[in-house]
Length: 254
Image 1 (cartoon, one colour):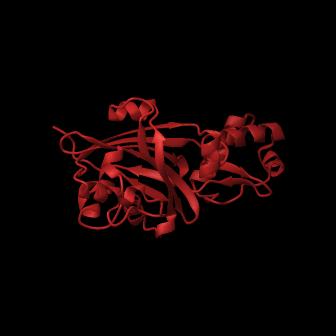
Image 2: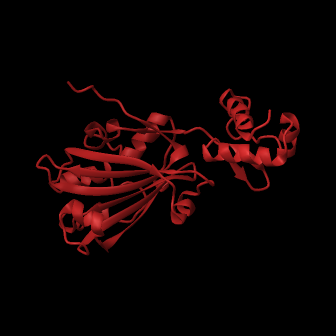
Image 3: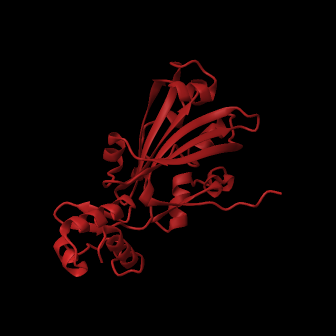
């Protein structure tokens, strides 16, 4: 076996077939070099390729470790079902946990809340002048102590002033979360749009989400409207790509 791509293919197949399970450490590079009859440089190139693909990650004092498969289902439209937040007390991130069979507690979501100047994107969404003061509610969500994503929502001041949405207490904004609060304010969520794309993380995102080297993030941008098309929330999320499987179910349109 001469090239690093061939070595990477062999290791990739071994990982996908369960020879090396998630969390397992690959053999040392000198052992792999001997097994495949190549030099250390070729092994390093092969491992770097698998790392770029998101299959493995180097961990100091441990070696090259096979990454865990996505443990969390991130539901599509079902996570926003009104029967969950309007007639129950299940907010979106808790719906994901329930669908994934994973526990949660209030401290899994922490947040900071305050008035900020709307940047260009937020101002455009709400039809405001850039620099207009809006409420920002920035959350970091964890699963078993590991951060999974951040979500930052923006609101018009008069929509949420004095409500639980501007309370920084950890956890959802009361039973039913923010959507229930908006409904009580006379702004019931009716429809939304979500845009999702991937990119490499910024240094701050790497630190906040405790990302391994080479892991991308999935960016979510969400706009939530009333039945009268009034925008009541603009949100931006940053999700660790390896910690979610995104699931959507829908009826095919005619």
